[in-house]
Image (cartoon, rainbow, N blue to C red; front, side, top):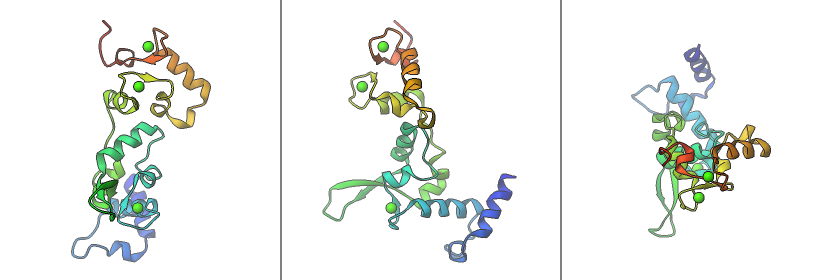
Length: 168
Ligand SMILES: [Ca+2]
Ligand SMILES: [Ca+2]
Ligand SMILES: [Ca+2]
C-alpha cells in the first residue's frame, strides 16, 4: 500500500527530476524525498536553512524534535561575507538518507538538554512548551502536564522529575 502510493507520487513528478542523476536510476523514495526537499527549499538554493527545515517533511509537531533533527542533519554553511560560519543547512543527499530527518529522534535526555535553554539544569515554565506536541498544546493542558511533572512544586522540572535519574 505504502510503496504503491510512493510509485503513484513518482509518476506525477515532472520528467527532469526523474532524469536528474544520469547513469543511476533514482528510487521512488529518492524521487519523493527530492520533491519534498524542493518544496521546502523556498529560496531555491542548495540547502534547507532552519526555517525551511521547520516547514519540511522532517519537522515534528514537537518543536524540540524538529530542533534535534536539524542539529543532527545540518552542516555549517560558510557565509559569503567571509570565513565566519553563520548558517547551518541541510543538503539534499543527507535529507534523502535520513528520510527527511525522521530517522533521527531525540532520547529523553536529548530533549531535556535541548529544552534547557539557559543551561541551569532545569526545565522551567518558559522552556517547557517546546517539548510538547503543539497541536494539543492549549495553555491549560501544558500547565497541567508541567504541574504533574513538577512533583515538588518548585516551578522547575529537574532531571529526576523528567525521569533521567533516580530520585535521591
Ligand atoms: Ca534554502
Ligand atoms: Ca533551564
Ligand atoms: Ca521541580
